Image (cartoon, rainbow, N blue to C red; front, side):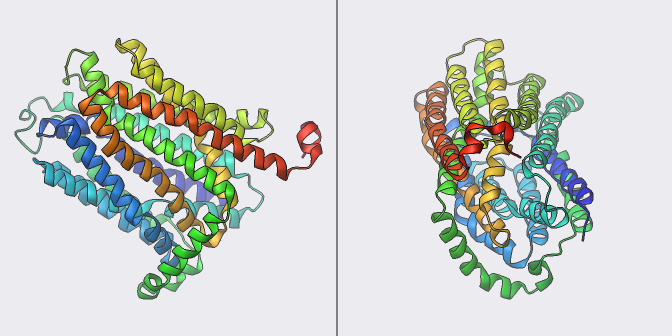
Length: 431
């Protein structure tokens, strides 16, 4: 059996490299595809297609991870995402970008929940008494740090390659170089995952892919049945959908929004990197705040989530009204900080409700809700952004978040009903 320390080190290393690879082109990718001919509506459509691909494959691939093992499904997922990056690199038309995003969606569907399920189950097997929320918060810190540093590094890279051809005329341009580095990082990530992840589950030992595929429908049905019968999970799915809609609206439109605030300039790549990199760093701060806040509120994770889901939505609504870069950046960062506070308490609530043998498939069902929200944002809010304004799309997204805090409140109410009266009225006497 792997030690808890080994499991944490491996998981933190792999997720750090993964999110570093994701972050390197993140601040500039929309500008890159716009320079190659896509308009805002087409950007929304490819993001919607990406989300739709995940929606269609999310749960079956989670069932596959439960059936044949989380490690190898993760490796295959990273392979799909690497090929997707290569395809975006050579894309100069809407159909090719669309195909690349569909492949990336397949990879994200395969990876969603698989490595986290391995981490949670392996950690609980190594140390059943280990408290999950602080550990997940630490994982979130590594994720956000990698995203922040990767975004800053990626946004600075174009300045190192100013001698390359202008945007829209060649494969290798200043804006495409962060994507090139991301592809190499993903290749390294595949090798490290193969070497370092030690999976000891029965599924991993089976090694029978054909039998594993045959088991997927039954695993998926069981996952949906368990989800449908658990009111807490259903409430959490609603909050995840709202969060997915809000995040997608921010990620799809923030670059053209800030370019417009700068007078239409898209050339200051480092400014975009500072904005997005700062987002992830303040998100990391929010993630670190989640643990003491949860302790302060007697581990009422639902209440913590309700408060900061509301703050997150209000920040997006206020952001939509801004007309100066400084105020807009401040509120953009505030939105990500509040999202960071929500992440680990939400994950702790969800994992608490899930049986180990169905963790990948049920985490995939939860992730599915987020991608449904992303799909709605990609198509619906993309249409609003193109035909009305980005601000209007963000006001809708922020309002949905504010309304969804009531779902977290009901989760907290249900938790309160589970506790003895002593725990409700004399928390200082509870263990």
